[in-house]
Length: 222
Length: 404
Ligand SMILES: Nc1ncnc2c1ncn2[C@@H]1O[C@H](COP(=O)(O)OP(=O)(O)OP(=O)(O)O)[C@@H](O)[C@H]1O
Ligand SMILES: [Mg+2]
Image (cartoon, rainbow over all chains, first blue to last red):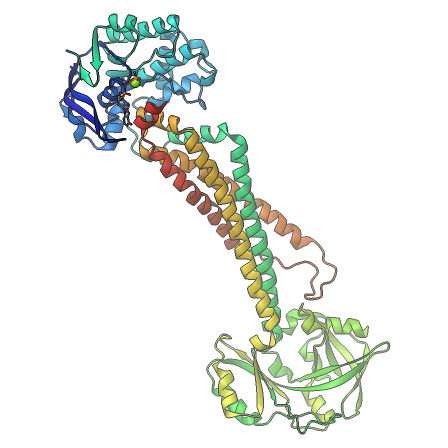
């Protein structure tokens, strides 16, 4: 098990105090592909931001590797995320000033656990795996949506994280690209032993995941 | 894990951002350059002129002048005798004892008409005692032609300011006639021509032997003025000390006698600093604006960088480095251009000026000003860049990414 959330309650104070997550408890295991689905506004994204340690303003506890996330300082959290968690968003958020290869390298250039040459080599390997090696030096904004999303997944993987959090990664993609991205994520869990947790509205995806969690008005349906 | 924000990755990202909006970056750099250039040129020029004037004035005229009080009642229309300074011995005594007095010299000044072959000019004659006067004025440095005070050993020798010599159309070795108020005519010879560089002196100043002048006037013991040089010219306590004991003398200090120049120097100083400050302020605002807009436009990118592991410190650094690069580049360019323009001014020949008499403008190339220009330029950009950078570092990734 790589992450355990227990009795998570989340409130927003704006416009008035209201609860968006109700007593959510969840365990994520190694090599698992978990989908979170449910109606719009049911709290999927909110849950993912908490699981990914970006949002620490909640009641309950989040444990990973025997450590309590809430006990970490903000800089420790930043470093923890950098090393252990990869992100994929509905909108890929590649940085347009950088080319494809540089975008993938950015998280590793911060971590610096390898030389720049090693990072470059790793990034090229990832590009090969997503079938985009020949586009390595193209500016990132000159890619199609599907291509950008695949690059974003490669970027999420560059630091070899244990957990990949993806918020509707296929939300903006057509059928073909959706399948391609889903296969890629599944492959990461099955062949690399990573854990992927993603929010999705696509039944094809959550039905084909290892585990599907439905959210209803902030509750996890048991 | 890289713990310091000063690393190649952050600098690389900063550069990438700078290069991705070349036009704005270049404009911002030019803005800083303009500010620094203006500062350098103005300060080089203004302090050059100021120093030049200070040197001319303080070397060419005494810090304190003691003269006889003009008695309006007794004043006749055609005065043939010149009025003597009373109490000379007592004042001498007082000056010898005063700690702040560097040196002093007696003068015999008389109105006179100078006549050359072609010209006739009313003016004044400064009779000096060379042994005293040489401690007051560094005439050697000012001499254009002929000899200095030592030529006054020849009792018919007169030294002329360059403008005066020009007006009289005489040069060293030429003959000159002098008519004193008592009607006495004397044949003189130009022994030297000097220039202090400012018209107020070079137009009227003459040096002549005081002993000879006393004899010609028939007033052998007369002294008309005492000139005093101070050790600290800002301490003019001596002035009131003299006036309190001798109420029949007039005491003028350097500020009285050189009011326009003193004020002119101040005006030039104020002008330099205010114009440079205003320009740097404008440049600073330019950078502030550009970075601020970038931070707003790039909020998503900043959020993504933060989720990737870039900490607030990294973000501050990434944005601050952009403005520092602009600042350093602009400052270096500004210094180079400032030097080039200053140099250009310093070698551009001048025709004539009503005020100062120079071949080219005096420019002060003191390196400290270049250092100052650099520091100001960079400081402005750091200040201008700091607030947008801080703002960038406060971007909350959850809010931004969720909001898309
Ligand atoms: N910053 C916020 N302030 C106040 N309320 C918020 C804020 N963010 C989200 N909410 C509310 O929290 C609830 C859950 O939102 P969340 O984004 O988690 O839903 P979701 O399941 O991801 O929806 P979708 O499928 O549309 O992405 C919603 O009712 C939403 O209005
Ligand atoms: Mg959502």
